[in-house]
Structure formats: C-alpha cells, structure tokens
Image (cartoon, rainbow, N blue to C red; front, top):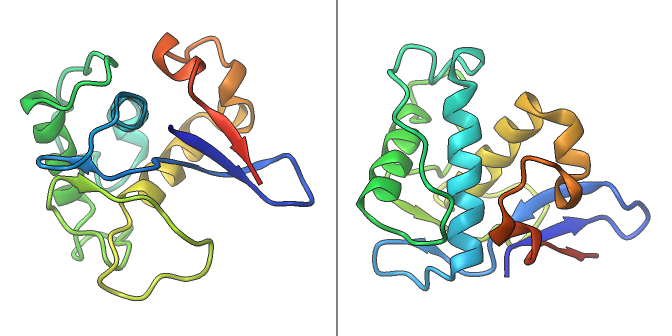
Length: 153
C-alpha cells in the first residue's frame, strides 16, 4: 500500500512512499501507481514554480486510476529527465529509467540509488504545504488513495 511515513515522536509526515516499485515491468500495485500519478500531476500543474520544469510544456493530467500505462510512463520519464544532473535541483541517483523505487531510509542516499519518490515528495510539499501535512484527509485526494494511505511510524 502507498504509505505515509512519520517520525516516531511526531505525527507530521516526513514522506509519502510507495511500498513496491512502480514502472514498466515492476509490481505496479494500484495504490502505489495512484500515488505516483497524483504526485506527477501536482508537480506538473505547478511546473512554473519548479525551476527544472518551468521551461517544459506540461503534459496533460493523468487519470489517477492506479494503472501504469504509456501515459504514466511518458510523464514519469519526462519528469525524471527534467530532474537530471544538469538542473539546479539535481537529486543524486535520480535516473530517467521510468521507475519509482520505494525510499527505504531517511538517511542520506549514496549516489546511484534512485530518488524519484523523494523528489516528488519535495515538490508536493513545496506546492501544497497544507495538504502535505494532512494528505489523508485532503479534499483533492483521489478516492483510490483515500482508502490506502497508512500512517507508518
């Protein structure tokens, strides 16, 4: 299930995470895919506020349906390409492979470990700070995610 991970001492979320990899040839659990679709939509809707995305034409919104298809793959790869090493917001380890891997630790990640989920979280927090703190009850949350977000300490 898509999860909200919190610190043990606070109920403030640190990260919304997928449980299994999302992408071509991956597990693609519907709630994990839906979380990625939702975060991609938010990032591209606010693309003018994200320097790495500001010069790109925003692709159409995805249906947040939990199905990893061609449109989701293309939007994900475009996002990853825009976050490449030449951008000011480069996240070490982010590669345009069309796969979102779960973040396994809050510790600094060594170069080479995929960081797409972290980058999506950073952009969601930047663009919708109030919803980030209470995503499980946000009015804009797609129904498929409202049922699946769990608080994990």
